[in-house]
Image (cartoon, rainbow, N blue to C red; front, top):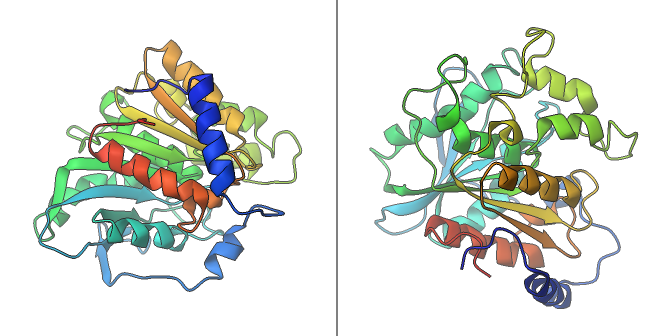
Length: 313
């Protein structure tokens, strides 16, 4: 059964199950809490370009393969001042142990020369470099999905949407490597809405750079008078014609769950089928914490997405 969104009874059942499994916590964890733990690593770092930030870390399972593969995109508000690929090391290792290869992509972020429009987007299009990587590593690119967190959720979903970008855009790719689906973890999937209503825009305490960050990402100063979101924001690019799972933590104050639900509503109005999952007791970073109750189900959803069974309860 494919779910466009949870029916109330199904949502209640998941909520009760997750609430009973989750340990009591006074506050959601922060990225500093996560990075304060011993961090796993991989010895396989592969450049996809010539610049320092143009590389991916390959987390390769044991065994001959070929292995189903996840393109992993980290968050950090698209800003070079915040952590990068290291944020996703913990769940990359967890997926590797489950027999799933992970291509954890670094990219130019705001504060780095060439970042923004089009540089950041063209870097994330390094998903296509997996065709070369698969020549020397046992990857099954017929089972390839995108997973991204926060700003990386936006970029992962954008990567999956590239086939709909028209030839008039600098972000157009003639033959993009197709993803079977995308799972966004607290993804900022609607740039226009987040610019207008995100915590920064509303004066909230949880910051992700505010409208200036979105403007820097979309090249607002360099492209006056153009539709800044037409080729940069998944919400403006629908229908994307790809399986989508939109994940939120109930206690997330950086990308509150309402953004996930509102994105789903826009996508479904354009004819898409989108699964929305919300996890009680989870904040922003529990979604990339392999020890959290939320991740126990998220990892199962990634496996289902790889097998073409997105959104199964």
